[in-house]
Image (cartoon, rainbow, N blue to C red; front, side, top):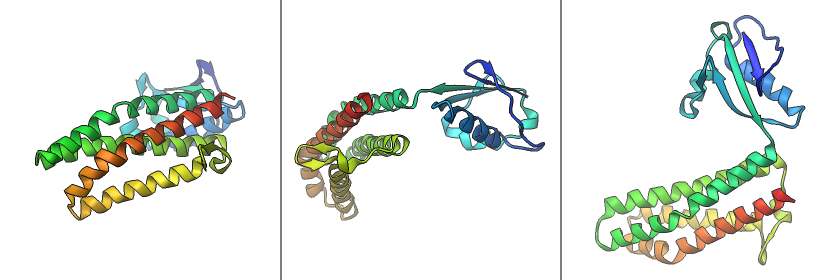
Length: 204
């Protein structure tokens, strides 16, 4: 089996019967020493699909001829992630406004679809923050955002989303509509501010 990292051949030693996951760990450790991270993987000419990655990692290396890895600078990758999620949040306004309108019109099913889309954007923002913090060992309590730390702002946002869960479980659509109209604009704005601050710190 040949292994290429950024189109350069790399010698690896893996025991017979090893799985692709073992190779990935070896290559990840190899590039970490060069202050790089794995970005994607191509196995015998096929890019590994994100939704089936676990299945791919369970493939025996003995049945694979060529694995190509692409790496990236961790800081650049983090900046790309932050920018991509910030762009997603730009679309959240249309979703929560639409959900509020559908609730008012009694179209609960459609409102829930729009709400789920918006919540997925917020979840992506939360995951992006967690990944960037973990990868770059950032201390959110030392980063400020107005009169609070970024850590406090993040926890506050998670708490606000818990109110949405309570309203949904109680099927209190009046409360939910109020949250969509009055709280969601603030939530979106706050996530955008957090991502902006993370981007600023990463660039410095």
